[in-house]
Image 1 (cartoon, each protein chain N blue to C red):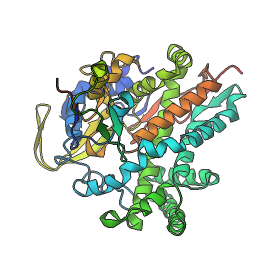
Image 2: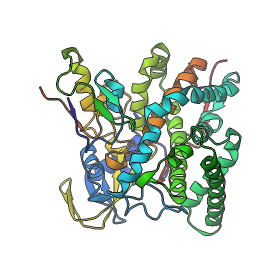
Image 3: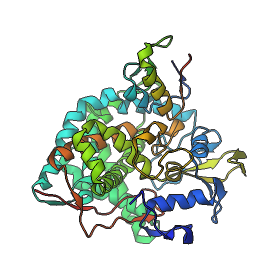
Length: 393
Length: 62
């Protein structure tokens, strides 16, 4: 669907609500202009070159000013920081996602993916989102932090309450949000205490082992853990949904995976480009700046439309389709510059492991007739709420 | 082949596509293995790493 157009594009430049065609949605942003101020006063940046420029100039396009009011009880390190403070945290956090850390846990992550798939592989049908994509990223998180896998469902309830509460910031929802945030914080504090006394081979122990001027306080550890949980779970859930939606409706690409598993990395990159789960990131200008021929005043809210830039016809041969020719042009799904997604390598690894394990067991499948492929826009993280598929057993 | 440490943020694309030319350090940032001259048969790989760098941090001098 992502490489087709519907007729609603021209008549509806600002689609909202349930959007059936993401390609048309992002095109509507590019069609408005390369850089423009929308009806809410927010500056939209929609092309690959302009978005990339903004990402690589954090001194002008500040992340700290834009992200300091997220509903979170602890500072969201390091998203809420600009240089020079940002560097101090990334120096500690970058190694946590290095290949040297991920390689040893890959067999365990692979085993867990296989176990989840085995539960429905003999059934002939599955809901990719409910039966797999909502569960797996949380298990990966728990594994990396050395937390019990049995706590998965409780953990998911907290995260869903926190994420749900952040969207509707009114009345009773906020209470549920606060309760979940408090409970999750207490849960994590307990494990940090345990790791302080008996370190293991996990994220908490690694951060606690950092000394000298990079020493982290407990609130900083909690802030980072919250950010990891909020940024690293529903994003991978959403992306898994988009990947399987694409593969289920494109038998030729699916066949390519089965014939040549080495093609998985390129296919994953292309689906990441077409369907980023975080379609935009926010910034605030710290001074007046020229971008794309426009002058953006100081202290203006800016949205960098990663999703629109990723399908910029000026940057890609076939902007709306999976095509290996596009791969070398890269994409902005994980952002860029100093705030680039720190979990990108983990996300890529999860996607690759899942596709390998899934296609070993279920090479051929298709969308169930009842599949609803629309997404809700605007939202900070896009995703399908359900993706029913059927397959021969 | 050169990598600009000020621009590199550790995406890790370079050592994934050109493992014979770039290695990862303990943070996951790229290290150029042959900064002065690399084997001629690896030129395609080197150019691919440079093209794929999201930060445009890699340069190839000829």
